[in-house]
Length: 457
Ligand SMILES: *[C@@H]1O[C@H](CO)[C@@H](O)[C@H](O)[C@H]1NC(C)=O
Ligand SMILES: *[C@@H]1O[C@H](CO)[C@@H](O)[C@H](O)[C@H]1NC(C)=O
Ligand SMILES: *[C@@H]1O[C@H](CO)[C@@H](O)[C@H](O)[C@H]1NC(C)=O
Ligand SMILES: *[C@@H]1O[C@H](CO)[C@@H](O)[C@H](O)[C@H]1NC(C)=O
Ligand SMILES: *[C@@H]1O[C@H](CO)[C@@H](O)[C@H](O)[C@H]1NC(C)=O
Ligand SMILES: *[C@@H]1O[C@H](CO)[C@@H](O)[C@H](O)[C@H]1NC(C)=O
Ligand SMILES: *[C@@H]1O[C@H](CO)[C@@H](O)[C@H](O)[C@H]1NC(C)=O
Ligand SMILES: *[C@@H]1O[C@H](CO)[C@@H](O)[C@H](O)[C@H]1NC(C)=O
Ligand SMILES: *[C@@H]1O[C@H](CO)[C@@H](O)[C@H](O)[C@H]1NC(C)=O
Image (cartoon, rainbow, N blue to C red; front, side, top):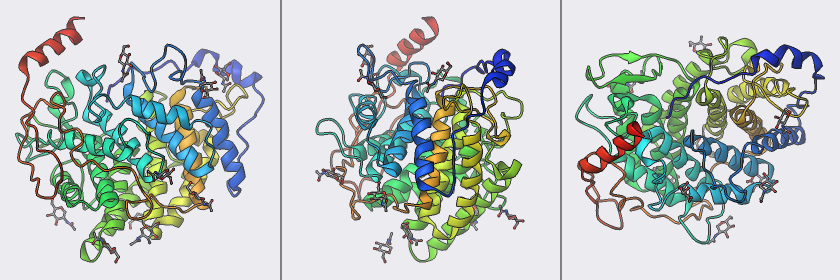
């Protein structure tokens, strides 16, 4: 993920604005389906004020300085449509989610591919996966949503790196990026989640195999503990992953929890109880650590100090949606998750008094607008509102045997010779239909050129 500078919170004007703004929160009755839908509609409208991709001369789905954020935006729109039935934004959603997939159908578009992290690409893969699981119609031309998720999977497993730490994905894709020396929770937990979801949707054994492999590696590393259920943010390849950067973020817990919930729902027999243990452990840790004031979700590493960057403002929105899906896939967790989504949703709504026009803040636990505003604030608010709609519609993500009809392409992305800097390691293709494996060679000259373009220009 592209780390950005902290942002201007409009601090200077906060005091004045708070005085003049009438306390018009998004009016939310958490027990009313219609009220939640209305709140989601208001926050989504405000969210789309930041989207220009459907205007003449603009590029669909493009966020040049923060490319990955298109994925959470489209995730929010998918959830909004799925839970409310409102199709207002579906065309922009469909066009943008397709456009950014690039010519190889793996979310490595050439405008951005030379400086992406595995997590950036992965979030787009998760958005495409959600489109498939919600039966969002495939476009008549272009790539199917399922194949786009498969394209991300295929390009990422080629980057599985056994040269250090016994495996794992590095954070960044390219050696000239400083984060290349790290292996982090969101990249590995993201691919774990994507693999588990592909396994459940397609029933293709290769995805199950990789989900297990990524989980096993994660618990063998300092990133994920299967006894305390601590999830660390990162670990360094320079000391063979002996130490951890233990920053605590909701989404690192959320992504492993989501993947474990899919594994629980998909697997039967003995391994199911192993996944139930993981779900309960990760859920317990998530609820204990991040729902602090009044049971309201909080990324406490940045919120009290008011120094959350754009990325960090999105984490609790992403996590809220993953909690909601977990509640559907693991019914025994439903009540405890819903209770926390309700307190959080209520507080998020109370934070939306900004400018008396549905502008939401960051620190939901303050239950009043804190003076922050932006697309990220609106995305997270929309996501926690729609997450609350599981109370009224328990329709779980579909699979290819329960109504999902997105076209499968197990070889998606295999032809993309520019997606990886590492040589292909052994990938067993026994279970895989379709084309052969292309060996991605290390294109030294090309990498050199890209570094020159990045750092020289
Ligand atoms: C709310 O008001 C602010 C300040 O005028 C403006 O920047 C923002 O675009 C408005 N949002 C909506 C949804 O109208
Ligand atoms: C872009 O989408 C918005 C809805 O978010 C709509 O109001 C606007 O008219 C659209 N613009 C164009 C040029 O289609
Ligand atoms: C629940 O949501 C699904 C997907 O949007 C929809 O098809 C279904 O009609 C909804 N069911 C109810 C009871 O609202
Ligand atoms: C890449 O940039 C070109 C030139 O601005 C633009 O036409 C194209 O749509 C962009 N592609 C993506 C995927 O953003
Ligand atoms: C797939 O399902 C969606 C949603 O139910 C539907 O709109 C679409 O027409 C279907 N596509 C095909 C090829 O059957
Ligand atoms: C926890 O992970 C370790 C690998 O680090 C494994 O040996 C052990 O069996 C796991 N425990 C459980 C209960 O799954
Ligand atoms: C789990 O059980 C269901 C129903 O008994 C079956 O349809 C499904 O194939 C099983 N899944 C796995 C991964 O064995
Ligand atoms: C998590 O587990 C601990 C120890 O069993 C327990 O004390 C705590 O109440 C649990 N937290 C939640 C939110 O369930
Ligand atoms: C899997 O999810 C479905 C849909 O919510 C649910 O009905 C089912 O009970 C879940 N399976 C298990 C084993 O809990």
